[in-house]
Length: 336
Image 1 (cartoon, rainbow, N blue to C red):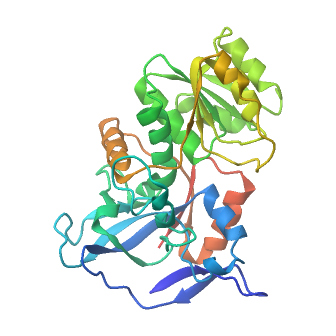
Image 2: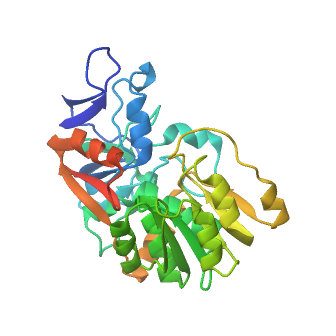
């Protein structure tokens, strides 16, 4: 079968194609014929670390969907032909998070990911694809969709009448925007592109702020909300946005902390959280249980993920480059 591997050898490309043997499912495991995989910002960070020895030979990408192709012994919940997607954390099925789950993140330091024609995973690490979604759409869900769901809905309890602040128009941001619209919450969207803001309006964005034209976007948020601020802030930027996120937050509000898009740097002044009786909710994706709950919601509300561009398997380097450019609106997907 065909697969992509990360390469740590000096002088070679960081991402190389390889022809390898097709894996066979052992007890409790299932083989999936991958039809589509999607990229996340995390995958750029991992690619940039490809020179580290522990990543040599690693199959990248956490997100993918396809068809059950073979079943190992002691698997009762799946049949050949079932449409499935893989959960980001292979081992986090239900219950609270444990640090021991970290090595099981697909496409990370210790576990191969989804950028291969066939993958084998535990039966417990899979979820059924919502019937109204294609495999391309389903491939966008495991990281970005579940992250937005877990942070905003499961732990953030976002609902009707709330005000969500979304930073940018990438995968997590647009899932958050779609969830807010379906739940009856209003949404503020900030972006550097008027074109992207116009598209965000069609998804439910009601207050649109171009942060290039309005660098003090936190002041604009407070003005647009009559001084109330946002009840939920989907914090995707990191050090470059955190202080403004804090200043945009409503009393009793929640910052859903996810991103490091502006890098790792100085820590923000968190005193305002105490003054406003507000919270920070740290989120790293979610469990199989979270994934299943989100899929029920997607089905009930007929929500389709936003796919920016689709690349063929031969064009994976171009897919990475497009994501790195920041010009995307929604998710970047590779078909196999």
